[in-house]
Amino acid sequence: MNSIAQWFVDHLGGFLSPEAIVFLISMLPLIEVRGGIPIAFAFGLPMWQAILISVCGNILPIPFILLFIRKIFAWLRPTKVLGPLVRKLENRAMNKSDSIEKMEFWGLLIFVGIPLPGTGGWTGALIAALLEIDIKKASLAILCGIALATIVMCLITYGVIGHIF
Image: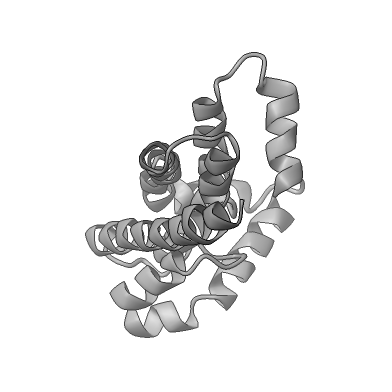
């Protein structure tokens, strides 16, 4: 994660503010608030600002994934270049869908909210779309999951790590 953040700083630091870099990092799949909050801390941003920027960046792609990913995948699946990648993403998402399929709302909330590798809003939205979970239920579960992940990351970053450094 540090190498990704460092890439942003090295390549975009002269053009973008720390806040914009945190926003962009928070938009990235698999990184999201798990990366945005620690990077904001590293930039010296106050916790309230880290939360606001990271959550906004994390939430922005979710409606597009929920609404359009199945159509995009259907369009890309027959192609020789991107078809294998689409199938790989679908398989990876569906392999993580067991608990979500059984418990829907709570399963999706917990999946998105526990900040572990391979979980988060992007993957949760992809799974919800592929399982055809009601968009309102999925949106609320993902939003609550992002809030939970944000709380956990703030406690770790600004609490534990903040007291060490």
